[in-house]
Length: 118
Image 1: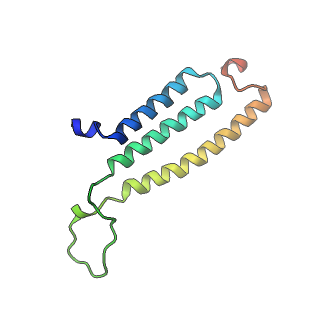
Image 2: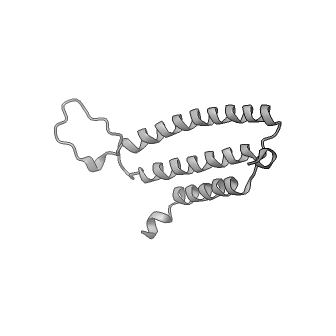
Image 3: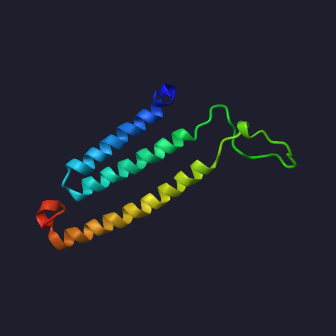
Protein backbone atom coordinates (compact mmCIF):
# COMPACT_ATOMS: atom_id res chain seq x y z
CA UNK A 1 0.00 0.00 0.00
CA UNK A 2 2.85 2.41 0.70
CA UNK A 3 4.10 1.82 -2.83
CA UNK A 4 0.79 3.11 -4.23
CA UNK A 5 0.89 6.47 -2.43
CA UNK A 6 4.59 7.01 -3.05
CA UNK A 7 4.04 7.38 -6.77
CA UNK A 8 4.37 10.91 -8.11
CA UNK A 9 1.04 11.17 -10.01
CA UNK A 10 -0.89 10.45 -6.82
CA UNK A 11 1.03 13.09 -4.90
CA UNK A 12 0.46 15.60 -7.67
CA UNK A 13 -3.24 14.75 -7.78
CA UNK A 14 -3.59 15.21 -4.00
CA UNK A 15 -1.63 18.48 -4.05
CA UNK A 16 -3.75 19.92 -6.87
CA UNK A 17 -6.92 18.72 -5.11
CA UNK A 18 -5.87 20.44 -1.88
CA UNK A 19 -5.00 23.64 -3.76
CA UNK A 20 -8.36 23.68 -5.55
CA UNK A 21 -10.27 22.94 -2.37
CA UNK A 22 -8.43 25.68 -0.48
CA UNK A 23 -9.08 28.14 -3.30
CA UNK A 24 -12.80 27.35 -3.27
CA UNK A 25 -13.05 27.57 0.52
CA UNK A 26 -10.99 30.72 1.14
CA UNK A 27 -11.86 32.93 -1.81
CA UNK A 28 -15.03 35.01 -2.02
CA UNK A 29 -14.41 35.89 -5.68
CA UNK A 30 -16.56 33.73 -7.95
CA UNK A 31 -13.96 33.37 -10.72
CA UNK A 32 -11.38 32.12 -8.21
CA UNK A 33 -13.91 29.64 -6.86
CA UNK A 34 -14.60 28.40 -10.37
CA UNK A 35 -10.87 27.98 -11.00
CA UNK A 36 -10.62 26.03 -7.73
CA UNK A 37 -13.44 23.77 -8.90
CA UNK A 38 -11.60 23.21 -12.18
CA UNK A 39 -8.44 22.27 -10.24
CA UNK A 40 -10.40 19.74 -8.19
CA UNK A 41 -11.82 18.23 -11.38
CA UNK A 42 -8.36 18.08 -12.95
CA UNK A 43 -6.92 16.36 -9.89
CA UNK A 44 -9.62 13.69 -10.02
CA UNK A 45 -8.86 13.06 -13.69
CA UNK A 46 -5.12 12.78 -12.97
CA UNK A 47 -5.86 10.39 -10.10
CA UNK A 48 -8.02 8.08 -12.20
CA UNK A 49 -5.54 8.15 -15.08
CA UNK A 50 -2.76 7.20 -12.66
CA UNK A 51 -4.87 4.30 -11.41
CA UNK A 52 -5.25 3.05 -14.98
CA UNK A 53 -1.49 2.78 -15.60
CA UNK A 54 -0.29 -0.76 -16.11
CA UNK A 55 3.50 -0.97 -16.63
CA UNK A 56 4.53 -3.02 -19.64
CA UNK A 57 1.01 -3.34 -21.02
CA UNK A 58 0.02 -2.69 -24.62
CA UNK A 59 -2.97 -0.99 -26.20
CA UNK A 60 -5.92 -3.39 -26.56
CA UNK A 61 -5.67 -3.74 -30.33
CA UNK A 62 -5.87 -7.37 -31.37
CA UNK A 63 -4.60 -8.90 -34.58
CA UNK A 64 -7.19 -10.30 -36.96
CA UNK A 65 -8.07 -13.83 -36.02
CA UNK A 66 -6.59 -13.77 -32.50
CA UNK A 67 -8.50 -16.37 -30.53
CA UNK A 68 -6.53 -16.74 -27.31
CA UNK A 69 -5.75 -13.45 -25.61
CA UNK A 70 -3.93 -12.89 -22.33
CA UNK A 71 -5.77 -9.98 -20.65
CA UNK A 72 -2.77 -9.27 -18.41
CA UNK A 73 -0.83 -8.02 -21.45
CA UNK A 74 -3.29 -5.23 -22.27
CA UNK A 75 -4.46 -2.07 -20.56
CA UNK A 76 -8.10 -1.47 -19.74
CA UNK A 77 -9.37 1.33 -22.05
CA UNK A 78 -12.46 2.08 -19.93
CA UNK A 79 -10.81 4.53 -17.45
CA UNK A 80 -9.28 6.46 -20.35
CA UNK A 81 -12.61 6.72 -22.14
CA UNK A 82 -14.41 7.80 -18.97
CA UNK A 83 -11.82 10.50 -18.23
CA UNK A 84 -11.98 11.76 -21.82
CA UNK A 85 -15.73 12.08 -21.35
CA UNK A 86 -15.16 13.87 -18.02
CA UNK A 87 -12.82 16.35 -19.72
CA UNK A 88 -15.37 17.14 -22.44
CA UNK A 89 -18.20 17.56 -19.93
CA UNK A 90 -15.94 19.67 -17.68
CA UNK A 91 -15.00 22.04 -20.50
CA UNK A 92 -18.65 22.47 -21.47
CA UNK A 93 -19.62 23.07 -17.84
CA UNK A 94 -16.84 25.62 -17.41
CA UNK A 95 -18.06 27.47 -20.50
CA UNK A 96 -21.59 27.67 -19.14
CA UNK A 97 -20.29 28.72 -15.71
CA UNK A 98 -18.22 31.56 -17.17
CA UNK A 99 -21.23 32.71 -19.17
CA UNK A 100 -23.30 32.77 -15.97
CA UNK A 101 -20.54 34.72 -14.19
CA UNK A 102 -20.63 37.25 -17.02
CA UNK A 103 -24.38 37.67 -16.52
CA UNK A 104 -23.88 38.04 -12.75
CA UNK A 105 -21.28 40.73 -13.38
CA UNK A 106 -23.62 42.56 -15.76
CA UNK A 107 -26.40 42.52 -13.16
CA UNK A 108 -24.34 43.36 -10.05
CA UNK A 109 -21.11 44.99 -11.37
CA UNK A 110 -19.17 42.66 -9.08
CA UNK A 111 -18.12 39.03 -8.76
CA UNK A 112 -17.55 39.05 -4.99
CA UNK A 113 -20.07 37.07 -2.97
CA UNK A 114 -20.35 39.74 -0.28
CA UNK A 115 -21.40 42.42 -2.79
CA UNK A 116 -24.72 40.82 -3.62
CA UNK A 117 -25.76 39.04 -0.45
CA UNK A 118 -23.82 35.76 -0.93
